[in-house]
Length: 465
Ligand code: PXG
Image 1 (cartoon, protein in one colour):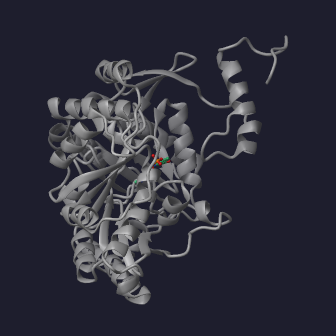
Image 2: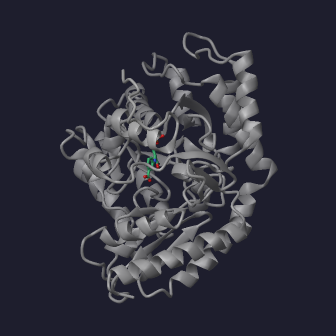
């Protein structure tokens, strides 16, 4: 417990929040020493409307990341606040354990069965993407046990994948810094290369590279033994890994391989879902028919935590017909307030035709504006689908050559963006973006124009301008 002393900043001012943040708050993915030593401290965001954040100094910031890839319907939606308020007054919480249910999770389950890809018709709820991917790991093993194949317990995923921060989700993920020194991945979690043509494709034709990347999954299944592999999991587009959009040849091959070896195919739609790519789910675009699909983020546009795992009819039937308790669940599985917000959020997405707008209007506009940046001297590639996109910073365009310092150029550009009040993420030497789906074409122009300025400054800093 701290007490106020005279040299302390006044309570609830920027300086006070920064000091309290440094002293008492352990933020995720933070170098605490670096934060402590940094002059500025954290930027304190106090309010937001549409695609614009406002910080505690009154500065307006264009949010090119929709929070953390989640605020799909934009900020300031009264309907979502009202849905939560109404539900909290009526029944803020009751559990879904022990043969009980409440109306919102049931109504949402019915809605999700309607809007998710064909074949997926039951949902298991959690409160985060990590929890849902942990559920996948347990559910896949439970399923194979019920099928009389308990030895089918291994998982295959990709490097640069992000599936969450809990132990199983981080094992499914392919971020080495999250694993080394943390005793991860857990036994039984295997990784292959991602379908990342720009960094790994060399001189190969994209589609040939896509087929070779998929073949790695087949080779890995054969190495482990098909009778031991439970599931393959992948984000249709790897988000946190750098917005890796696979060649068209990739997913159909993955699907064929999974079917051939009786391996469950799991799509992690935590970022891609709920309209991000111009489809309600990116699986539709890539022709993926997943056996399980995880969702979070855009399901409530980040207004309240909620996640889910959709399962196929076959998995659902097996659970129901074989019987035996699934020893798994969270206090907040099917939280009524979160589910009420999700229903109101999906209603906005549908009523405002956000998915169609992203596919036909704002997505193509972003692609067009990004294509202009491809001419920039330090831009090696631009790519996007709907409102998720990336550009690669390079020293030389042909052959594709990075700046020295692996990630340094990206960090420089990200810091310029921060200073120019546009939030974009740097992933190694790529700049990634995922604005709210409500962003206007004018706001996209503003985002791209600020990014261009920051690329110019980055080029100058790197002696390439
Ligand atoms: N799957 C995917 C595809 C994700 O992007 C998770 C699962 C985990 O969700 P939770 O709700 O447990 O965080 C994510 C999360 C970043 C960043 O810096 C990305 C995420 C989370 C935090 C930071 O890009 N994605």
